[in-house]
Length: 163
Ligand code: THU
Image 1: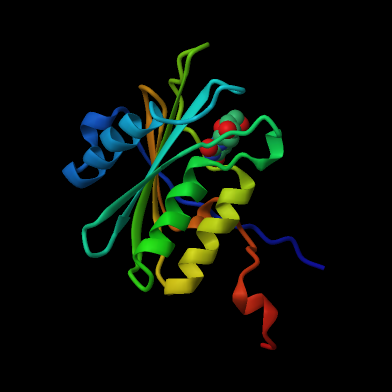
Image 2: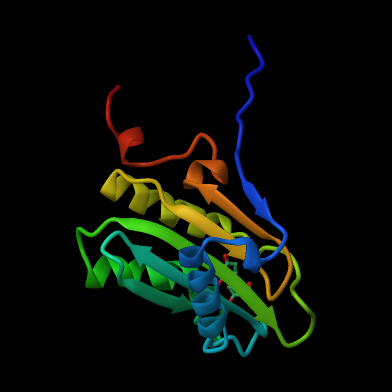
């Protein structure tokens, strides 16, 4: 038996103003699209925007349902729409943010476990890491190069094949 450790790497910025222009624009767009979320039950409005390697962006926001489990997170709305509309085009980055009617979100919003798995699928699909840019309504920004930083020992299509 031996103990092993998994390392994650994040870049932490004090505010959106410190980001490179491409990332900053994505955050602004993600914040805009969060306002269009359909979140009457949680009042937690999540916005996500996917940037493809060809420069096209695809937005998503959470879509809730009176039958709660049917709702879908912003990240999956965006990633699935990108996969459906631009099949075969690699995903470069995804920016994720949220706003709430009830409190100020001043911390980066991280993708839920299911969305981490969905993002992992698209990294595997295109054999290309996806850069994640996480923010709240204000405050710090976290950037990570690839979903493995959020999902160590991940399960993907390779797990279904003999090694
Ligand atoms: N939500 C997202 O859209 N993305 C996440 O990664 C976390 C949660 C949504 C789901 C639900 O509509 C609301 O936020 C509260 O959980």
